[in-house]
Amino acid sequence: MLQTLRNSIVIKVLGLVLLTLLLCIPLDRIDALNRERGESQREAAAELASTYTSAQSLIGPVLAVPYVERWMETQRNSKGQVTGVEPRSQEGVHLVFPDTLHIEGSLAPQQRYRGIFRIPFYTLDATLNGDFAAFDPDTVVRSVSGSKLEFRTPSVVFNLSDLRGLDGSPALTLGGATLRFAQRMPGLSEQAFGGGIHAPLDGTALAQWLAGKPLPFDMKLALVGQETLSIAPIADETTAHLQSPWAHPSFGGRFLAAERRIDANGFDARWRVSSLVTSARDQVRAGLLNPTDTASASDSATVQTDAARPASARRQAQVNGPLQTFDVSLTQPLNVYSMSTRAGKYGALFIGLVLMAAFMFELFRKLRLHPVQYGLVGLSIALFFLLLLALSEKLAFGLAYAAAAGASVLLLGAYFSAVLGGWKRGVSFAAYVALLYGALYGLLASESNALLLGALLIFGMLALLMLATRKVDWYALSAGTLQEPVAPPAVAPVSAVR
Image 1 (cartoon, rainbow, N blue to C red):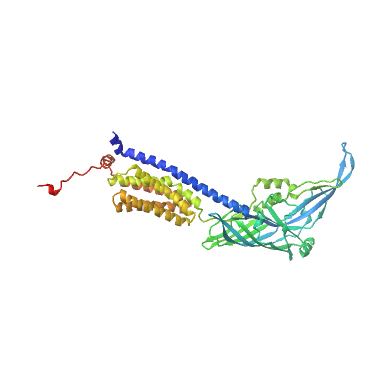
Image 2 (cartoon, rainbow, N blue to C red):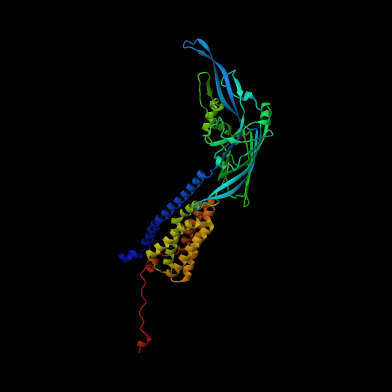
């Protein structure tokens, strides 16, 4: 009975299935290690963001016009009788967005290291130009009909998500006058979009603004950021042209590039966004303006902003969610941890195909393999995925894959040359494993077609197995192949025969 069970193909197959399931345990541990290393990479990126600079989001330039609104308010007693009048005032900031804004820039990629991890950064060298329309006081919404507005010196404000990325002070020319930037944005919130800088109008720029003339501007900006650059389209017509030698960009945000070219020499992209298709202005008003209330005994003053008045626009901006931008990211061409994770998903299938091939050799070549030998073969395949992860941290992923696969193929070829009783059999088995490694790399390299290629691979292997065994008498093969090898009869020495 025991001998029958040992020679049963069904028992052998069930044992191989159980072995494959057991080998999923080291595969799962390797996958957990892979996720841990990927998390360490994200922590390294976050650490560099906190100590150096983070991804950058640009808003501006915008013309901020502070003012004080004054009016007389009638006072009444509890019976509704007029008891007098009291002066009231309210401070506010009116935002003037550009009519046109064009951004011309280049992104120079650079790498920063934290331990063994490489984090992509960029240096932006850009020119922003456009114009502000002539200021019309009637565009400022009054909270009280008939009130008087007293305008103060306006400023050009420019918002960055991380001011540490500024490479020197931006150079701004407005209405023919050169303006200097200072920290913060008076009267505006620094909590909503990070921080900002402002440049008060003076000289010819202030004179043209007081005269109600348009104000053309030109701004030079040098900026460092981590991986992603986002730009808010705040003008009536916002256009941008960005180019870089980085050949692996990722375009995102609310608005994709209208034109783009990507090749081995880098990318060239253009955007065109109209204020008719974006609520970025309402979002900027709701976020940059920070209403607060103050009062005094002699002159009750309430500091209020335009964003607090059109409540419907403010609510709509909040409902719309994150700030609408167009983005470009300098992504890694191959994230070794995501690629290793994807490779590991095929681990159980890969082990099953290799063990199946070893079983076919056992049946058709009338050999006998021990379960320990099957286990060693399965562990060598699992070790490939660990070796791939370790090498990919030091080498390019393609080279790491070739080195790990080559080592695995050589090991299995040498092992099966001895196990299968001949180097030709060992080489043929190693060639089969090398073919599987090549197919797996094809799956990893073609992410968009991975499902199709994987399905075709499984179907092809099953079809090959079925065609190769279509005329096999499994009962006879089981009885003849899996028997214990019989020792040849002893032959007497010739000298003993007389």
